[in-house]
Structures are given as structure tokens and as C-alpha cells.
Image (tube, rainbow, N blue to C red):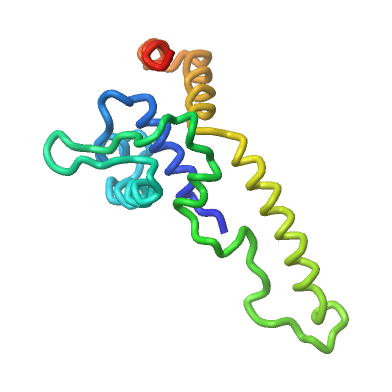
Length: 163
């Protein structure tokens, strides 16, 4: 099952991409996500283990991207923070084998669920953290976000540094 860990992890990475020169503490990131810093630290730990972020402990420390956001796909993020149980669960108890439906339903559903997972992974593989950040910033500017001018300036500066 896909949990909210993927969404929170992408949020963390997009935040770190936006604050690339500063990095981010778990408290600041948690404020953006609107969650507890412990949740962010757990996600950051998984992202660190996957080589997406580095962490500097202590005063003045925080997390920073270890790779360019254009090199991190959402499939990478998904694999870093989700277990491999699958998207869908089957029956909690084995269906009755003597029944025509019960004896065959799980094999049919497993095939469907496998195809659904492959399709999802193909989509996630084509989207990067940079793509998400770009779209978030465009929406912030279009919506008149209170921080949109600052956000836009940060993007322009980030693009110029990469340029």
C-alpha cells in the first residue's frame, strides 16, 4: 500500500531543492509539511540511505540534496520510502477454494494488480523532483502566494547557478 511517506518525501526534497544553498532543518521542513519533526527525520533518514540527501548533525546543521533534483525521479523516492508489499492487498483470509470464484479470484487479481504497479512505476520514473518543484513554483506564482516573488527569485537564481 502506498502511504503518505511518498508525498512527504517529495515535499522534503522539493523544499531542499528550493533551499539548496541553505539546506533545511527538520523543524523548518516540518513546518512546511505541517507535521512533527520526528516524521521528517525518519523520511530524511530513508532518503539519506538512498543517497538522495546528506545530513549535517548539530547546531547549524540540516539536510541538503546529495544529487541534482533533475536526477531524482519519483520512482527513486517511492522505492526509498515504501516497503515492497505492493499497491493492493488481497483477501485477509484465503478464499474458499471449492468455490469457482474463491478458487481463482486471487490469481486474476494478482495479474491486474501487477500491471497497475508497473504502470504506476512507469509514470513515476518520468517525473523528477525538479519537475515537481517547477510546477509547484508556477502554481505559487499564479496563485499569488504570499512568498511567490521570493520563490520565483529563488528559482531564477537556482537556474542561473546550474546554467
